[in-house]
Amino acid sequence: MPWWNPFRKTGAKDAREPANTSQAIHERLLRDRIVMIGVPIDDEVASLAVAQLLFLESESPTQEIRLFINSPGGSVTATFAICDTVEYVKSPVATICVGECSGSAALLMALGAKGQRFAMRESQFMLTPLTGGAGTTPESRPIIERMRHDLITRLARATGQPAEQVRRDCEAKRTLSAEEAVRYGLVDQLMDRRPA
Image (cartoon, rainbow, N blue to C red):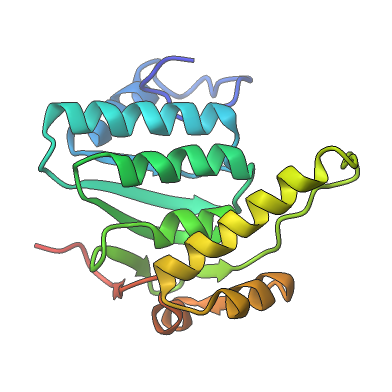
């Protein structure tokens, strides 16, 4: 998958779309230090997002990177890779929710630079529990429990909520409006218009 075409799944291309439209859009966003995650997070999505964050940091370590998120979450290990990179890079990473941040994407949203975590007014959030799925084996249970603990601990630290409250909210699949997300500590402020 080319570096400029984030998260595009293979398939038929619209015959009306010029060959370079997607490339031009994503190159332009990257030049403006914007990374976009607009699909469920898997290893491919994480690899590209990590590469883009590292590239932008290497270009200008002190300049802000804006990470736009519209995702139902996905693989926790893939999301942790992006989260670790957001915390690793020297560049401050502003996070902006445009639509949905659920599951592990809510953690990614919360890890933006303090004071730089934004949500569009109609954004929705859902805290969800980490489950092992039908293929969980006795051997994998300790790993899943450790990841669950890490997810809750990181979310609690980022939001300022007690870990036990975060655990209960995840188990209850708590949904939050953008305004409720501000009160919860997932988001710092609502964004109505592009800052000047």
